[in-house]
Structures are given as C-alpha cells and as structure tokens.
Length: 247
Ligand code: ADP
Ligand code: MG
Ligand code: MG
Image 1 (tube, protein in one colour):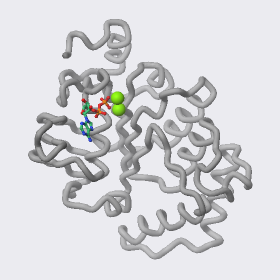
Image 2 (cartoon, helix red, strand yellow):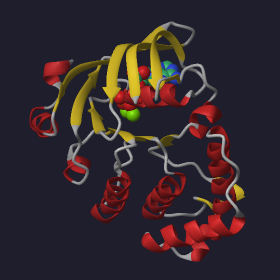
Image 3 (cartoon, helix red, strand yellow):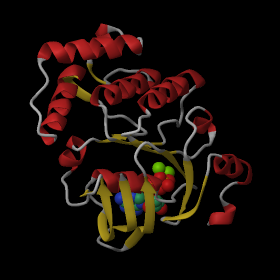
Image 4 (cartoon, protein in one colour):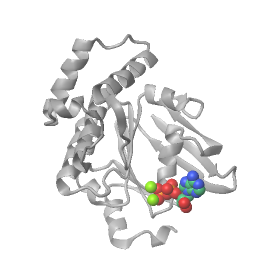
C-alpha cells in the first residue's frame, strides 16, 4: 500500500537535511502511528507525501498502491486518494464547503476513470453523512471552515474524509489542542473509516489519541529516521519514558 524507502528530504537547496533515510511500510487495512520528539521531521514527512513546495527529495522512493507518488503533482496525489488532515485546517473564504468537496470528489473519480457524481447523488450522500456527524445544514452551506470553532473544524475534516473515502489517510497532530469531546469525534470518524482497503498514518506527539484509535503498529521517528517500531504498547512506553533513548 504505502511504501517509503530510504526517503531523504532537504530544505534550503540541500543545506539542511530533515528526513534522513526514512523507511516505512503501511500495508493495506492497517493503521500505523508515528510518534517522535519536536523537530523530528514528522510534519516534514506529511508535507513530502503531499508534495508541498519547498521540500526537495534527494534520495529514496515512495509508492502508493505500487505507483510512484513522488512523480505526481499534489493534485494528482489527492485525486489518487491520498488525504492529508492537518494540524490547522485551512479556511477558504468565498467557497461553500459542498462546492469545494464536490470538485475534489469529481477529481478523484476522474483519476479512477469514472464519471462525475450527479448533484442529487452528491447531496444525498452529504445529507446522510452530515446527519451521522450531527452537522447542521447551515454548517455545510458556509464557506469551508470560515468562522468554525476548533471542534467544528474537526467535525468538518471527518465529514470530508467520509465523503471522499480516501485510499490513504495521513493525520498530522490532528489531536493537538483538542478537548476530550473533539478527540472523540476525530477518533470515532477515523475508526469508522478503518477498512481492509484503506491505510492510515497517524502522526502524534502524545499517546492520548491512541487510547481511542488503537494502532496496528507504532514507529518512533527521530532525527529524520524511524528508530524503532512496535505494537500499540510502544506508545505507552514512550509516554512514560520519553524519547531520550532515541535521540
Ligand atoms: P516535527 O513535526 O517532528 O516537530 P518538523 O518536520 O516540523 O518536525 O521539522 C523538522 C526540522 O526541520 C525542524 O528542525 C524544523 O525547524 C526544520 N524545518 C522544517 N521545515 C523547514 C523549512 N521549510 N525550512 C527550514 N527548516 C525547516
Ligand atoms: Mg513540531
Ligand atoms: Mg509537526
């Protein structure tokens, strides 16, 4: 599913190496967590996976379902079903949420060689998922994330994920600053999306989220490399003992 081999990434025209030979495989159907100290390169990994400007890959490969991800433009990666959920979800003034989502959904369908979803089918799906997540129709009509509270933004992210049904999901510290209620919304949404066809990478600084989303594997990222891997228990050990053994 997602296979990262010897990934090396730099900024400032190669002056600074951030990812330094990172290798990681997330098989289909599994949820893996990445934990690590501040500055380890966790966010950089998610940026490199989405293809954000400013990060140069100088070595290594990344494939998603056997296809070379690094060769693709960011839009193409999204269309292939790679979904990134960020620490600070973006606001898009002037664009109603559903318009934005329908465009994203149709790009995904096109990448799969399918035709666009009809307006009634789209609305039907949006209404059903909105209801499940206890979202008001008003929330869906508003421009994306504009004026949303922290909890509402999280709910909206989960809504987007459930609408788009990504083939691979990366969450970068989605849990930071969330109260327990918002954490539950995120965890319930993520757990509902667990499926044999879908892989997930949950990046988190704290073990807390992993009480709700129990991962199949936990990896320690430090100094731009995976330093250790283990089961869900590893998160609890890290919470207790910190990252000193890995720096
Ligand atoms: P984490 O998410 O694990 O806290 P980051 O990936 O955000 O770590 O950052 C890893 C290191 O790379 C940090 O030292 C950070 O300052 C540096 N870094 C990240 N992005 C850039 C950039 N665009 N320019 C310069 N340094 C960067
Ligand atoms: Mg950080
Ligand atoms: Mg980070």
